[in-house]
Length: 456
Image 1 (cartoon, rainbow, N blue to C red):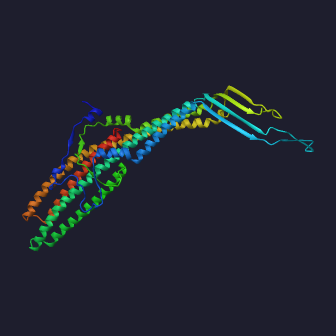
Image 2 (cartoon, one colour):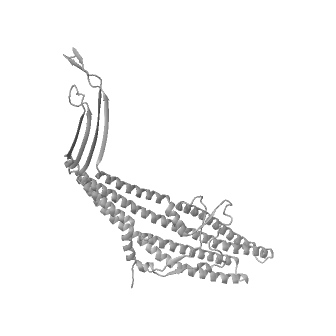
Image 3 (spheres, one colour):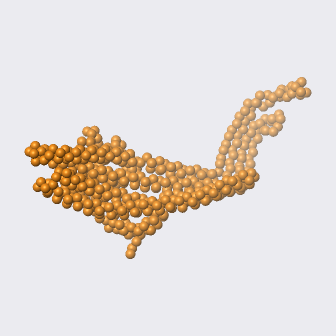
């Protein structure tokens, strides 16, 4: 028996043409909503692929995540600059007034004819030779931050894609729900016209007409509520995908497919543990904490630098009165420094880093458990939704068969109007339940792919 992801991707699919079960044939997706659209509304018919493409390009959360990733890359380049030589230069000029020399506790004073103009310039260069591993650790930390941001970006892309898919299919469900109810409304309106005539001729009671009108009113309320929900989700899809103008989104004709149930939970869990971005982030965070520990330990290591200097000064410093000469000189050398206080003040920081590593290890196990639970829920709900479709398909057949029988009896005056209303309600509810089950199964399938880290 062949298992694994390859078997999952190559599994057979079945198509659900449930719309042929309806007593009244209607188009899958109307271009507008009768009685709800405004003359100024713009209708935009799109496919799922088009909405996902727009969302991956325009979604604000994704754009911020891409910016964070770009910032992390620049931080790596900035950290590498610590290895390059530093170069600085400067010039100075001072005008100094003639000093006064006092003797005998200010009883005699002498003004010195001083050189009033003092100037100089210098160029200093240096290069780090050994920094206790601080520079290397800092670069590695920045690289890990960049990898974490890359995983966050991938996770954000998957989250946005999953949300777009869910809302797109929810929109399909609502459009279909509106069509089912509107088809029943047309049937009820036709019966009301017949009942008005039958009540006038004394064939039916006025209460029969009122019950039917009440049923019509309830369906009209349901349609109104559904249309409002369509407007809300369409607007949300516009926000997710960055579509300007908030047009009325209408899904292009879509064949609803639900994959056959050939998944094995253990294999799905293995895929999730290998692919989930949260687990990779937790592992990278632990590596980052380990580098922080190395960075703290490096505080107890010496720093060695190489230096070079060239300077020119006028007048020659260190003489009094100063000599009207120019002094130029250069120098090269090494510098060694050591922070003695790090022997006792870095201990708590090192201990804190070790505790953080222990916390990160616990967090990795916590993330594993969360992924396990999320996958378990997604797997069970997907299998459950597939079985629900079979049950609701059978319910639709039974409801339609019952409706035909009751209608035949009613037409031959062997059934009451209340029986007819009940039969119609059963057909309506069965069709709505089947419609919801199909969309739920598709959404659960994509939720399972997300839980496995395979929603690419």
